[in-house]
Length: 236
Image (cartoon, rainbow, N blue to C red; front, side, top):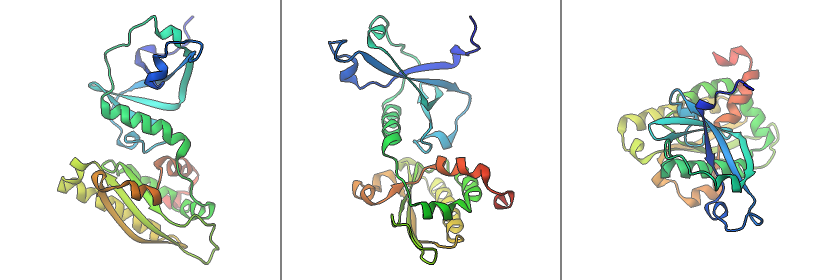
């Protein structure tokens, strides 16, 4: 039966941890998890570097694949023992690292106070447009209070935007990243009750584990999804 599925465009990526995947006992480790991805027709910078918690674009040889967090399936591990893995397209070490981080991020991604989110919501449309231009940024991280503040209190915000070391060392790309970040800061400073007190782009080489203890990653997706309901005037 033809189910109308374009299997030629699909790629299965086994995401079970290595030791579990080759465990000697099928009784102890009976299943493997497979992420079904699709070959992508073009590069999409906003789906790279785990910016979006639901969709991730990875390099696979000379092409790209798009993976959706919901397209994960469990199958009997014994089935895999009957087949050799395909050699092409393959994920390089950096893509594997991104994939691991993205899958883990599903369960540990940051949450911000409802009151902070409600204030940001008023400019979702404007922010989403700017974030689409942020293709040279690998992440945006925010430091602010976790409290639900009263309407007459300001959220003071510090922002760091990360870039690949090679891009950060490219003066043109660094300037472009700085310009996008400046635009985002200007939009946030126009929101009543939000005040950005410090912001800067950083090379990932200069973003430390100590920074991660205090700053929370700000997901593109949380803005993009909500912007569908923003009034047209906010898109101006």
